[in-house]
Image (cartoon, rainbow, N blue to C red; front, side, top):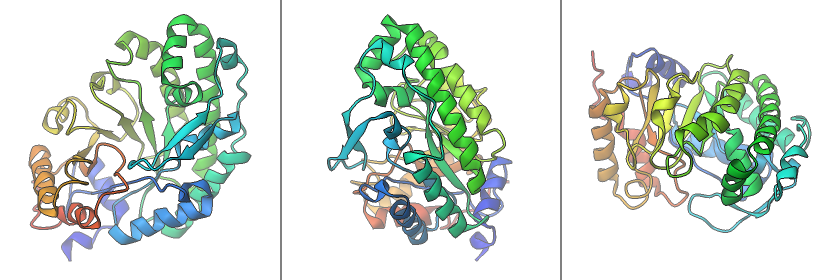
Length: 336
């Protein structure tokens, strides 16, 4: 079949260059609760998901605590449909706690376990399918270390202490990325959670978010498939034009900009088009395919990867996932 002649890697590379030689890429990803507590079981669950649906890239999605447990946080699985875990113990309580963080060794503890997971996945898939590792921004990690409200309070009451903590977090994250490069990953999925006008002002994000963001992304500059995820609603899309990423992913069905508007706002590939709850969980396969078609029309199928604005809920029916996968092949004609 024509749509299967390119490898996943070649298809993504063509998409980044602005050309779709056969069809637009498609990728969905999800959490794997319980399985995400050990490197071998997370690797096995991730590979089983990929083998079932044959997506064009593999996003490795550990629990958000993977980068924090070695600082002393604790969490547990409570049954959320997103597959995420709830924090039961935080590391940051006072302003001084930011100053007492230490730079973590990526070859020890939970970070080393995640490196083992990446090695297993990259060895299994080879060069033909790109693998990207989830990396939470320093501000996102700080939120989980302290709790959302505590972080916001400390930003406004103890800004220098928070900046010192963010620097330590950024240094640790850089070291982990440098270690992860050796596994053969194609890029990182850089998750930003505070570039929202209802959480921070633009001035605050530029002061507390941008500097550590760019420091972390510098560690990944040798990779070709770095993806930026802007989490939540009312996002500060316009401030990320200069970030060195190949792909931008956000909740495009829930918050501006739309896919068509975003094409003129960035030179990066756009990833999205599918509403993860209303469509992927509660919709029918026909509704999934209709929404995918709408996204393909909005973008012309160029500089576009079909996906959801965030993780696919673990309750999404198999038929809807298959419909998303098939939608990029049925009747698609490349735009000249």
